[in-house]
Length: 471
Image (cartoon, rainbow, N blue to C red; front, side, top):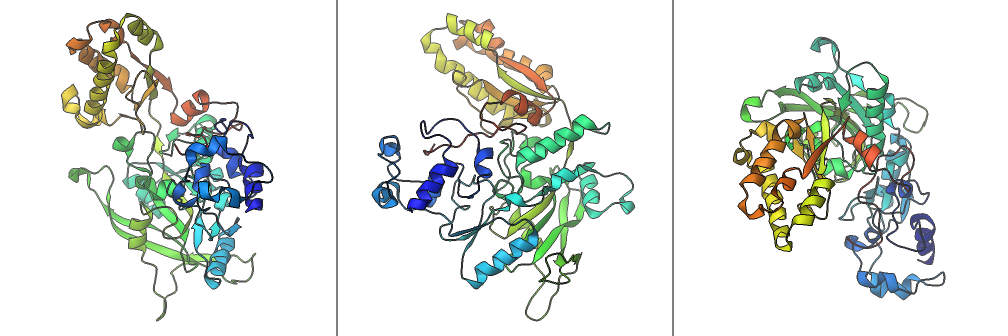
């Protein structure tokens, strides 16, 4: 455990001084040991340690042992072995080894699991960070008649989408965002947007996606992350390498759905010609089945993987992800000039009223649009995965599309302020409280406005940043 402590200090603790010093999980992901967690407390059982309030005063030095601290911290929850597979064959060998040696298998891409599922104690941990970065192959555009398209493009077009991107199982959303932006900046074809995990260091095909996929607040317009998947490729617990996705569907728009309803899911297996030859290429085909082994339950897997939790049903090695035509995007944020003017005039007793005014405006916008005199389509064009209702503490309000704030909602806010009789003092300043800042897309905005000295060059920012203590 002394060695484990030193590994954490050397590899996972960027500063020996302030435990809250800002740094990036992008750095921790690449550390050689693979032990680092986005939040250090997730190195302990249940992503928690006892006596967290004592962390800043503990007398820890090079001679301190885990035995000296275990009564304060609790039980470490670290894997016994870590494998960094570069290919699916590497991963299959590791899974077989675990089975032969009666080891649990855990999977960690970027360690954002707050339940500790990526740091199972005593397990053989698979870390796919070295898997192929398929997004580097670029955007695939679906051009032509359905008869000449593969199944992925047929499904994309049935959903009203004209392109997709293949994402590797170990890639982060920063990797993916950068590739989509690169396509938009370097080609004369259609510019695309992708619904991702917002924070750049979150895994694009790991626990975020398999847990549902909460994005930057556009779920009402485009759905969750799991709604963007066209095909899944993964390794199952028995070592089978499979890929699967919908092959038949029906229009469900009249039932209130934004995408067609899947009616049939099919898949296939990757068949190795020589299982012991690393360089031998196999091919995709029908899965072998006999009296002792049945074909994988692709219908069930399609349902389970999209929401059942990261690593619960196997190791996802790649996904094909639909892209959306880029639309006008803007960030609605606090107008500090108007806020300052209102603050200078206001009475302390009015502060809670303003918070309440904004709270109910947002609730009406997102969930009761009829109270604002707008329709559901307009309502769906704004959102935020972590809306801050305390306007005195937070500047960022909403992410919006199609100029909907400037064209519609700004006036609705002014009407709401005007109608609120309890806020007559500084009323006109409050009408200008929010302002819309246009950007090419969410990742373009994040790259520009969330820049920080600690962030590696060319990476989309990760929020929240790593820390030592529970939130």
